[in-house]
Image 1 (cartoon, rainbow over the protein chains, first blue to last red):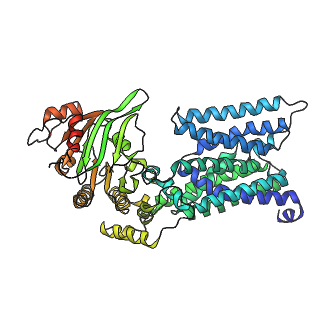
Image 2: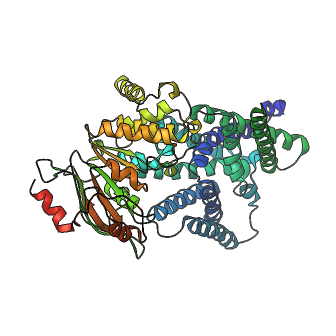
Image 3: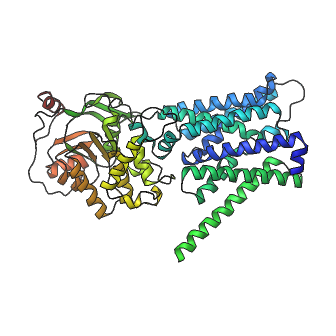
Length: 274
Length: 264
């Protein structure tokens, strides 16, 4: 596979996308798990399908449409949740379904043959374009800066939001930023594993890292490494076995997480036995 | 203890109500806590104790009424408040050490890009850690602490900003007897330095230690010295609650509580 990366532009794009996706996953996966926002992330990811459909309909890059829809969904869910309009699981499921429905509608409104949207639903890391890559680079830099620059605030916010509020920490602004960062993460990962499979890559690396680390920075670093292993491992499997890359990455991630979980349980059991 | 003296109000709650949908969690609550008081809030589960506390802290918006802390809104008085939340409201599995948690009590207001704790913040955190005898646990993960150690860590975090008002929500829940005694011993020490507001489901803890109590069951049923009779307990809790009571105190009304401070 290494030879292919050096030889072919599309393989270089794929490798770089996998690497950037891993960085974003490592950082945001820890945030999403610690804040219990996994289902919300799923909702945001699926809402972005409406943007993909609109992108095709208007003739603009579908990933830009996905970005706009993701951010709007993240902000919409965030605002309605904060105002306690209704239960958050209801909100998430409605946004989830609405986004998918709008995507289907926009695609159906197109004249002629419908486009192949499976690259967005299930990922197609091997077909990442230069524009996709430029967007992914910019969004990854945004996530890294937001994580490092506000590290002290994130630490308090993730551990005890109520306490942070009593100290006057800008929890509303942090919450809004977190929602936007989740939307950004979803957009980066859409090209890697697709809208439907995005949840696995958002949770599996961070959850695996959580089994073996007890410090926030170490956890994020390990989650990045694990995410890269899953992504490149899946890419290699896809290359060798000629199977869909998104599916290969996700299946590898889930199997590795389950094995890690078993290993961690076994270690605890053996420790107790002693 | 006479609160109508020179001490100004640390907390003043005027006709505060908080509704969840159509249901009032607390209704028309009036309360005055003088500076230097050690006030306990008691009441049945679901009676609105924590809601009242959250309303006072500005964590939940009031549906009606007003709260002031040291004459300011809770938002403006935040530097003066140290808060020990219920252990159930925070992320106990979060990867953070005891020392980091205590230090986080010095986090500035707002959103602070590139913020790094200063040497004086670390010194203040170390001093509080030593005062509470937590040195040997400083590098331990919060998730690995016992219930008592965890509560002491939260108390240390609240103390590190040197607040004028310490607010504690069920600080001895999920805590063993020796830790519970240590926490109350410490609060006894701290009452000389700050106003204390304590919410607890444990009647005896409050009645024997606080110098003033408030009984809440959606509304304030009693506020005054910690002396209650069985009839009063029944009106608070809705059933007979055994408690030795030296003498009965008259019920204070909303208007009398406000009047009390206006004399100050």
